[in-house]
Every structure is written in C-alpha cells, then in structure tokens.
Image (cartoon, rainbow, N blue to C red; front, side):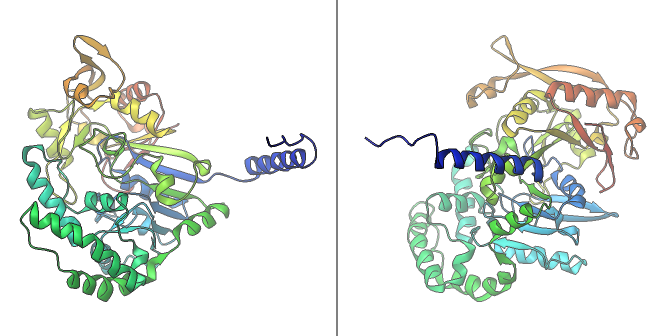
Length: 456
C-alpha cells in the first residue's frame, strides 16, 4: 500500500504557493469574459446586443452553430444580415473569431466576407479555428432527404446541412478546416465518409452518389487558399486576449430551448447554445466568465416544429407577426407567435446562470390594449411553475396567464427609463420579478441606438 504523503515539507510548500497564486488571481486579475445567449427559441435579437456590447470588447467569439442562424444588425438605417460571421465584425477594433464549436460552409463564409467588404466592412481581422468542422454538399443533401422522409414528423430544419455535419463530428468521421491543408488526409477522410454516405443516399433515398472529384476540386482547389488567411489556433488566440486583460464576448447562435441537451428535443439544433457551450466551443474554462446576458423577446416566437404552450393562432398572433416582421432572416419562414412565457424563462435563467436579461422588441407591443404573460402551467388540473422535463408532458401543458394593461404609446424614441410609459415600465418590472433576474437593457426598435439602459 502506498504511504500517505506527510503534511509537512513539499505538501505544505505546495499549498502555501497555491494559496498565494489563487489570491493573486482573484485580486489582481479581472475575469473579463461575457457570454450572450438566447433564452427562448432563437430570433431574440442577440445580434444587436452583441453589436452594442462590442464597443467595450476586443474580441467577439462565435462558439457553436452554423449558417442556419441569421442575425440582423441595423446601423444608420443600413441593415446587415449575417449568418456565420460574428456580429462584432462591424467594429474595426474587434477581432471576430469563428470558434472550434462552429460548423462551417466555406462557400457561405466567403460569400459573406465578399458581401461585407463590398459594403465597406474590413474583414482582415476575422479568424477561423482550424478545429472547426466543415459542411459539405452531401450534408445538405442528407438534411433535405431526411426531412422529406420524416414527412409530417419533420424537425423543421433549415436544410443547411448543420445536423448531418454535427452527426459526422460525433461519429468521428467529420472533416475539419485543418484537414484542407493536408491533401492526403483530406482525400482519405473524404473517401471514408463518402463510402457510407453514398450507400445511404442510393439505398435509402434513391439518390445519385456524390462525386468525390467535384468536392476535392471545390474544397482543395478553391476554398482552401481563399480561407487560408483567416485560419489559426483560436484557442491560444482567445487565451492571449484574456490573459492580457482584454474583454472577450462569446456569442451563441440559436437559443436555450433549441439546445441539443436542454431544449425541446427532438425539435432542437445539433449543438449546445446554452452558456456552458461557450467553454467547449471556444476552448476556455468557466472561471474566465463573469457575466452571462440572456436575450429574450417581449413576447415569444418559434420557427419549425415542437411544443409551444403560449402559441397564438388568432388575430393577435397575426398582428405580432406583421408588426414584428417575424420571418426568418435566412429561410423567410413565418415564425409562430405567442405570449411571453415566464416558466420557460425561469428555467433558462437556471440553465445559463444568467446574471441579467436584455429584452428586445418591446415596441412591437405598443398598440395592444392588454398583454398576457404566462406565469405557470396547468397540467391535469394542477398548477406547475417549473418547466417539465418530460417532452410529452410539455405538449399537454396549458398556460396560466396574468394580464397586464398595454401602454398604447410609441416607445421607439425612448432612450431613458423615464421616457417609457408607466404601463411599459410595469410590464418590464413584472417580467423581472417573474424571471428572478434584473433586466438591464430594453430594445425599443431595430436600429443600433434604439435601446434603453436600465439600472441592474
């Protein structure tokens, strides 16, 4: 049996040194990482607040998802619809980073760079992780075929190949950005994955096989050199920034209830948008994070299939869609509207360890006489105030509402809390009370400067 180390000598010296080091870390070094995460089913307007926070940041890191997550930023009346590139790209002082947790279609990335540069946005600082996985045409084909095969049970994906790319990653047959720069490895990996993929396409979906040579020509002949200036070791890049005391913002795509583990499975995305996903998808540890901002709409929307307890099927829902222009940035699909769900939000607060909330699109509710907030669910005659962990149960829940008076006033010009009508302030105070965290920011319009800072 091994002899236990003495409490004296080296053990004592180690503990003393570690205590000094820990004290220095706590007292002498800031933890300057901020995470911005969606708290509902996506489309909450995260991009505009990432853009706002970017003023004080040195780096913005996208940590998961792919080009299935569009976000729109309006600057001086000019709209920028981004899919893959981090929102901070619009600030010249920012280093935008596409982290290892993202799946990347190089064709889309290059098209987005070209669009931005044609409009005067310099993309030279953009950086792409060599560990990010690539999306290929066969991923998109599989996505379309799977959705068609599922029929009425389809998941409602964007058919951009995101899910199949993550599936290959999990199955350890994915191809990463770094593989582009070793031709032998790239071709070998491609041949392995196409052997199975083409068999599935032919035997299950009755599709022609994907041509290996066409992919090699596009990815090694065109994309490899074009994206080479952006490829780097982003883990070290991010840590160097943090160690220099610079502020880094981590941007999630999609949202909490589309999370692969914690969302309304199987109607979810194929990655982890929750705040914890930022550590895995960028290569930092949680000790660096000191602020987690959850972004949510003043009401709710959802795209695709899945349960939605507060969904509206009447004229009120149509009004929300029309006033809020609730159509997908990428897909143009009509979003499903509903009232704010505080039960969901309380769960999102827990899952993400939110320090605060930012509420968007308050102005969309300007014309409503009354506004409802779901404060609990009814299930089999009982009131429940926590999100059920059983998918079948969620489908059976009906919302219990509190009804609040509307403000019937245009809030879009508000820049200070006292500019807001009393009923609008009461609504926000009620949401904060129900959700259990302070609301620090309000979006009152689509433009970069249309927001109200609240005391948090």
